[in-house]
Length: 306
Image 1 (cartoon, rainbow, N blue to C red):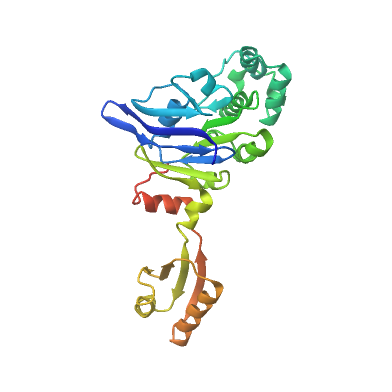
Image 2: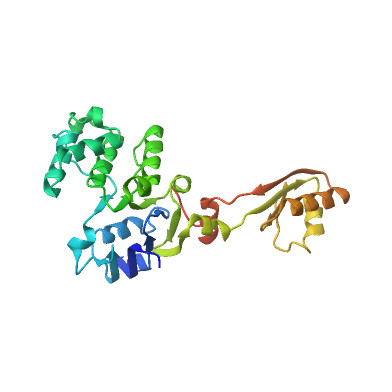
């Protein structure tokens, strides 16, 4: 049986008339990097705040590492590192001094502080006051704090905010390698679908407070196999010829989309049949679905990823 690091049952949260999270049953398996996806306002940050005990759900239960967040809060949050939205720091202290405070509270050695500063690329700026840090540097410092003590669970809310392309690449690598390097499980929220595709191996899709899907990315892609894109001289006539065999085909101005899985032999046979029927086939290629296309399909095209 798969060990779950995060398990919620029927978790709900309402702010006035707004149902921010609605009956959430979230499962995060040990060793996974889970992309927690959804457009702005989907309920991701509210969920993360509930997972960390920062706000109370109106219903349901939350277990971290097998411990209930309400009845065993200290045990549940032990070994959890987090970064929620824009992290707060003491601006008149240096980066190292900010981490010293956390190290002192957690009983950690200063060598641990130096280790995480090096991990996030802030060693050279460790003696500078945080008020002189850029937004990206402050984000890195927040991640460094989350990594103190080699946590078993990382909960990161939009961790690439404010980072330049180089910083984004480094953050991706750090998160992707977390299970192997630190033995950590990671839940990473984002509204950047392409970002998650390059980082996570599992995904949880939220929309309007509801969880639409949770599983491995491979399972999600397998449920949406893509298909073939065919561009031909007379797409309307080609569609009529193929519709009996492929009733789900879609037609646009320049060609056809045939959903499904096609072997190389099937694709070649399809191309040959069109050519022999007199159609000039200018392109025949496989379509690999993206997380964005899948999400838009599942939300009816209403996800606003901005």
